[in-house]
Amino acid sequence: MKYFTPAWWARNVESTDAVVADYWRYVETIRSRLTPGLRTLLDEVSLHDSKVRQFRVELPNQTVVMILHGLTDPWSPAGQTGRRFELRYEGVITVESANEEGWVSEHLDNSDLGYSEIELLSDGSWEHRMLFASGIELVIRFRDLSLKYEPLLEAGDERLALEEAMVEQPQPPDR
Figure: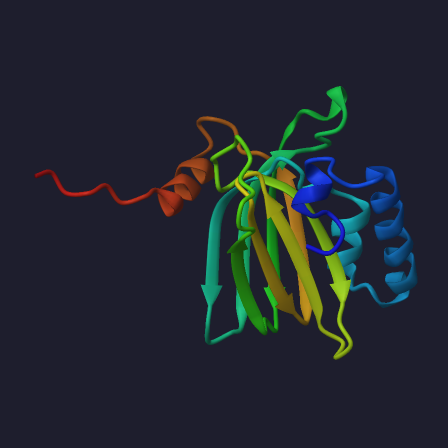
């Protein structure tokens, strides 16, 4: 992470507000080059506190698909309606994950997305950097992003059962 670092999250920086302002000033310098999916990500949704439900790498297509469950607006009491996000990264160049040594929050859920940031790189590709509550950082470098979102599926909706079946973890065999 370049802006929303573990130190920023822990408030171990001089001014957390200055970091936020610096990031949005940077976004304004690249706004004219944002793809429609990146504009949607930055202007219409918040992935804060979303949970990763599925992470799929499609090697032949150089595609990564990430499905998250989050809220309409996690910052507002009125925005607590569940929302399903599907991020599709096209032209993926690299996927990298690391955990900053020495920093792990009290949240041990690896799927809880805290903060994310976008950067335009000198070769014209993009990086989406995500910091999770566990301290894990995920970085995806790509050429384009599409983003779809819809209300979170309700119990009884057959699509919910299908999605949950896709993300179920295999159980270890009985001994």
